[in-house]
Image (cartoon, rainbow, N blue to C red; front, side, top):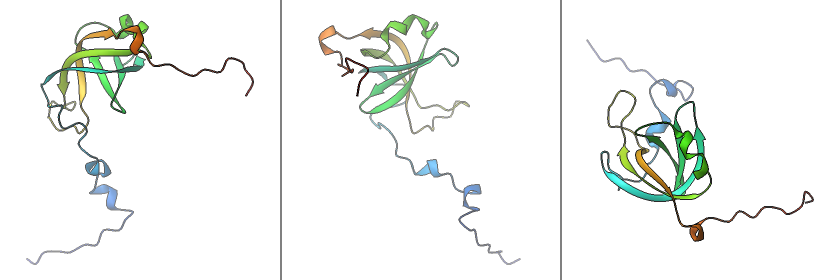
Length: 127
């Protein structure tokens, strides 16, 4: 039997092509299973998913506490911190295929007060 050839249009392309396949492998130096200590800023907390956002070198990484709830880290929000934990690139099924690393952290400490970012907030309500 002769092979059948079919033309795929741009509109049908999504069925066979995932645009996320083109995304770069973020932070290749952060290897799955590696224990790390990173400096960054806690940008968000999500109690429903028990995760925090951690701004590291211009990218927000998802960080999950190994034990307990993120509620105890509320005072860390928007502050420069040091996070210690394990890099994971595993998907929900456990396959190590993710392009973006996540952190399973054991420790999150606020950096010294002199290393904190300063936010330029308006002093009055006028523009």
